[in-house]
Image (cartoon, rainbow, N blue to C red):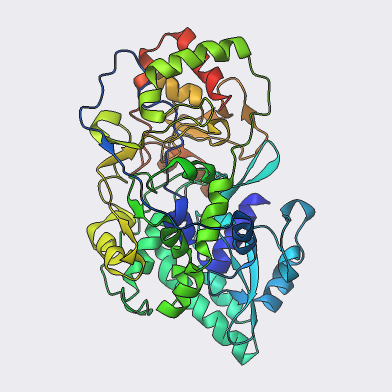
Length: 480
């Protein structure tokens, strides 16, 4: 059901810019970047300073997150109910009102200015995930399926609409879907294309007025999607900047509310959404990481605590009590992980950074990408597999010992198919990549680390630890 829900979310909103601009690249979800007694310190890590944030009400933020129509366009509610029917009980979440109380967690109903009730996707399409059989709001959707274009289905949906007012609302949504669809198809289930989506939407908008242009105003990004793994929202409370490359500076709520860029066509409409996004940010920062649900060897974890403090905390912070987090960006040459995202791809290409910084959004927020990746907080790391910013490593055990990383691998995408020993997803290594696979359905579930942006190299600091120290650190990470 979860793959079809993600695909339906794409059909309803053409994906969510929230996945790219709000938080999908906020951190790497990786374990210790400085683990390894022989690893020299990066001589020039970039410290990210804090920015003043607006205050908000977390309770009001949750209500707005799951009930408000901030995406701004969608398909008529009457058409949605005709095609998809009622949600199943496990798709419902509390705190929803009106017709939203009957919709799956990742869809929202709202009434447009025309008076037509619409259904669109919301932020939880990418920012709610399943682990151990449970839906967790704030966990990245590691099973999202964006491997096919639904532009054709979007067009066909319009053929079912006869009411002219409903048809006009569908046409607005469909125009945006057709514009973004060629740029948002991933090679593998679990990868998220939100950064490319953001770039396309920027290219079609006037930065001052936010008016949509059917003809792109900037050169579009490549159709090849740079893969990212959606990180956990609960880490935002520690971070001074958003995105894997620490690009998102200034007012985080303003950056988050660019989730509405798909169909927000005036500054006045953007201001109305921006008025309640500090509440949504406050809710996001109130989320706590879920506790590890399986047994923990407390003695071994205590040993791992000491190893972690000695070899990992300089980059990833400490977790006793309130803990501390240094907000440090490390050069790609030092970390060694796939550099594709950090070298200016997707929304981080200069022309898209300039668009944002000179736009209405940039009045109190900025994109300032760095040539590296921020060492992330590790709260709830047990739940956030697969690892690295591109999701190329299925377990923490494989990340701490690079000799165990599979070149080609697949998994079941069941949230209960969990490896308690190595902490992450059970996986099957295969002997070939996507190019050698004739079955298209199998191909899209193979993670192929030879494709652009998918390398599982780098972050080899754990290799310098003894096997016993690696096991101890692994046990300690379960406690965070």
